[in-house]
Length: 265
Ligand code: T3D
Image (cartoon, rainbow, N blue to C red; front, side, top):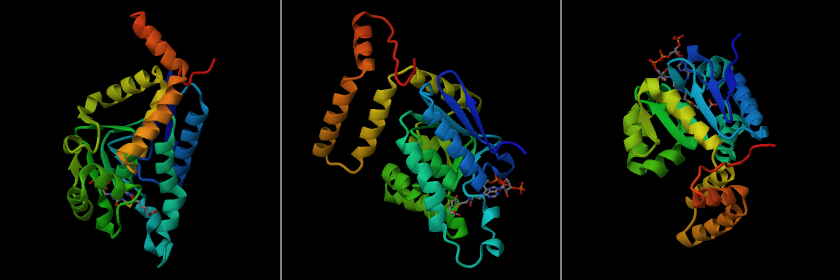
């Protein structure tokens, strides 16, 4: 049997590929657990400065594997709240909380929780042929894996409700122009762009990236006054880093900076 997740370690970063292409990389329990293990190993690796998350084959991820939700197997009262709390919610929290930037390279259709896991990543690049589908209403569910949060936050209620209730497939270029993702790129350029970005992050001030994530995530719930306090605290921390000293020295000496970031040794 193939590995349901492929973890490829490159120089300074990792590529994690969801690998159930015959099901458009829909999540079953094995894929959840393998993804969790791959993320664990990136987090434990001091020399991993970024992650690229992508999918094998023509899809990125079609959300929950519905073969595992057959009512004849599941019975009349399945507890989907429990499956969210066991698998999807921890994954969303994990992606958001990781110290290193997570780049999602959406190579094809991203449906249901597959779309919303992509939106939980820090930077989303999508192939122009990819589409984002809030497929939930087609099977009588509500958007999960943060879907109601990402859609409302990035697009506002009008578009959030329409996408959620119609399950309209949103093309990558519209997702980019609406501000839901960073950008749509030519299909054959996707992985080159994603890995170039990962490489540049891996050679960048990784502590500053982690603090930037933290500050931007805090902004949603804060007033300007509160956010200024967050910036003061986190900038103080950034200012104590070796990377800050190196960045300023490199600027003054008119040379490229040699950041150490998370790197060991
Ligand atoms: O349950 C819980 O724990 C709660 C959490 C829920 C999270 C969720 O994600 S719920 C939403 C689940 N996902 C969906 O409802 C999407 C279902 N898939 C689709 O609507 C379509 O497949 C797509 C729009 C994504 C793509 O359409 P298309 O025409 O490009 O491909 P296809 O022919 O439908 O799919 C290709 C194969 O993948 C096909 O298998 P086959 O016929 O070739 O053997 C199809 O059955 C399979 N597949 C696609 N999505 C899923 C799937 N198999 C199982 N589960 C899927 N989600």
